[in-house]
Length: 469
Ligand code: FAD
Image 1 (cartoon, rainbow, N blue to C red):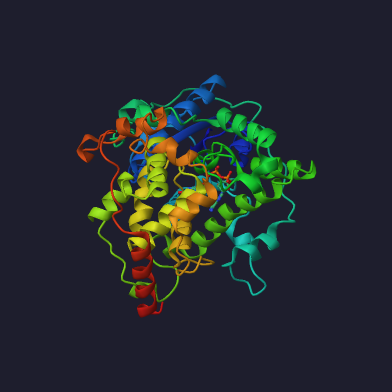
Image 2: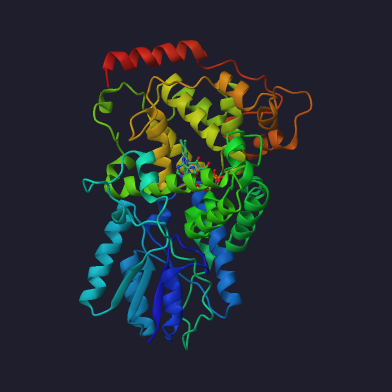
C-alpha cells in the first residue's frame, strides 16, 4: 500500500532524506500538500511565494511521472481522509521546529500511531537537529560564537541525489486546483512588480548557488555588507520553503573553502546563524512573541502598528534616505539586504521607539524569505531584547551607515525616486507596487524626517536608562 508523503517546507527532490527513503521503499508514493492553518496564517508575500513554489514543485513532480495532491483543511482530518481514500498505511514528513508545527505534528503522529498507521518524521530542514547540539552543561547555545565553535568541525553527511524514480500509486486521489486556493489574494501590492524579482523552484535555487559560489563567495566577507551589490547568496527564500537543503549550501561552502576562496568560511558562518536561530526557537519558543531577555517588558515601546511614524516607516517615507530606500526595496522585491534589515530595525525600535513585534509583523507580511526563527531572532537581536543581542545603546545612525556602506549613494538612488531628476526603473516601480490608499506619487516632494536622528537617539537612550533593562 502507498506511502503518503506530506510536503510542507521541503519543496524539493534533491537531498530530501524522507522522500528519498519513501521512493526507495519500493512502495507507491503519494506526494501531498495541505493548506491548513499554517498556510492561511502566513503573511501576504510569503503566502504568495509559497503559491509560486507549489506551482513549480508540482511541475517537477509531474515531469517525473508523479503528482502533488493538494488538499485544504485541518491536516489531521485531511490525512485521515486520504488514508481512507487511497488505502495508504503510512504518512511520512520532514520535521519542522516552530511551536505550532511541533504541536500539530506530534498530535498527528500519536493519533495516526493509535490507528496503526506508520507515521514517521525525518530531518532535512536543518544541518543539526536542535537536540543534537548542546553546551558543556547540557543546555542550548545562547551565544552564537560558542555554537559556531561547537559545530564547525562536525562531519556532515553528503547530500542525497533526487530519488531515481517516484513510484506512482495505481490511482491518483482527487486534488484541488492550486489557483482556487488564491494564495496571492492578499498581495494588494502589484504582485507582477514583485514577481520580476523572484525565481521560484529547486532548479533556480541550484543555479543561484552555483553562480554565487562561482562569482561571489570569494569576496563574500568583504562585500556582503554593501547593499548596492549582488554579493550575497540570495538563497534565503529557497531555504525558507526548502527548495534547497542547507546541506547543499554547507558542502558547496566547504568545497569553496578547500579551494581557498577566502569568503567561504564566512558564508558557512552565516548558514550557522540560521541554525542558531532555529535552535533558539526550538528551545525557547517564547522568543517568537515576547522579549527573550527578562526586564524588557518594562521598556516603554510604542506598540501602535498604525501610528503615523510607523506608517511612514512601512511606506518608506520617514525622510531618512537609507531607511526609505531599504523599505522600498522590501516592498518592491520582497527582500531586503541584511545590512539594511539591521538599519531599518534599529531605526524603528530605537529612533521611533516602536516595539520590535510591530516590525517583525510587517516583515512577516512583506518578505518572500520570511522565516519564523530568523525573523524573530533578527528583530530581537537589533532591539537588544534577544539572546546574544546587540546592546540597546548601540543605535545605528542611518546617515553614517549610508556613508560607510553606500558611500556613492548607489543603493539609495536605486530606490528613491523623489530625490532625482531622472529616477531609474527600480525607484519608479515602487509607485506601481504600492496600494492606491497610500496616496503616494513619484512627483511628491521627498518627506522631511518624521524624527530627527539626534533627537530620536537621545530619547531612546533616556528611556533605556530610566527603565534600566
Ligand atoms: P547570505 O548572506 O547569502 O547568507 C546565507 C544564508 O545564511 C541565508 O540565506 C540565511 O539562510 C542564513 N543567514 C544569513 N544571515 C542570517 C541571519 N542574520 N540570521 C539567520 N540566518 C541568516 N532571514 C530570513 O531568512 N528570513 C527572515 O524572515 C529574516 N528576517 C530578518 C529580520 C531582521 C530584522 C534581520 C536583521 C535579519 C533577518 N534575516 C532573515 C536574516 C538575514 O537578513 C537574511 O537571511 C539574509 O539577508 C538573506 O539573504 P541571503 O540569502 O543573500 O544571505
